[in-house]
Figure 1 (cartoon, rainbow, N blue to C red):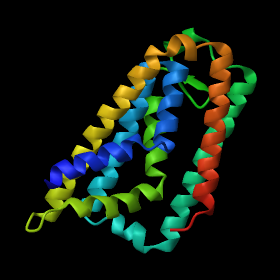
Figure 2 (figure 1 turned 90 degrees about the vertical axis):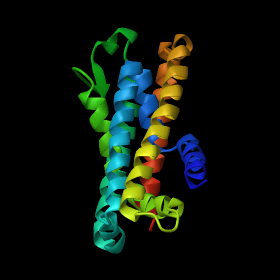
Figure 3 (figure 1 turned 120 degrees about the vertical axis):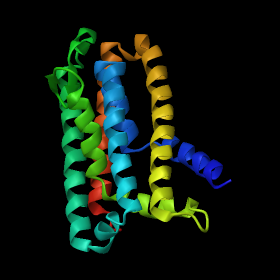
Figure 4 (figure 1 turned 45 degrees about the vertical axis):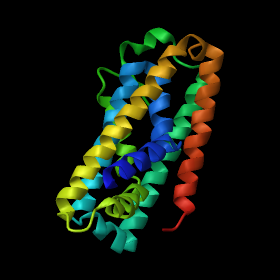
Length: 211
């Protein structure tokens, strides 16, 4: 019962638009399905690390320290604002051509392979202290009485990642199917503008928010 409730909650959390969705969709639109999946894997690596940190009490240190929390909050806000500004700059220059997918693009630079999108997903997740706080408050609610807490939390973190992968994989597939429309230069420029504004907005919100 606890596991089913947890899976249902994970689905709702994954479907809620946020920083992860913006990064993954942007990578998919700019460089194709492989780039979007690389960003997804980076994001889920970060989610898993925060989940494991919650399991072993490490993220409690971040929650307890206002200075550490504020440093991560400001760093995460700067990352998001920079990424948003670069998206707006790309929109102004013109969205990259479809054949640009030969190399994975990350924030305006073309790099070989999927390392760049992966690091973009990982970095934005790890630089977001809200993810740590969420893991600390979300996962423990689904630990049944009498269970081994660290083991159960670690297991729930893995389930959380698997649910995220399924949802974002479906989202990337749908975006790829619609690429005939979304890949038009005018549409891609508009999407770059929208993603830039969204990322900057999320960064500003993170910067001004308290716990």
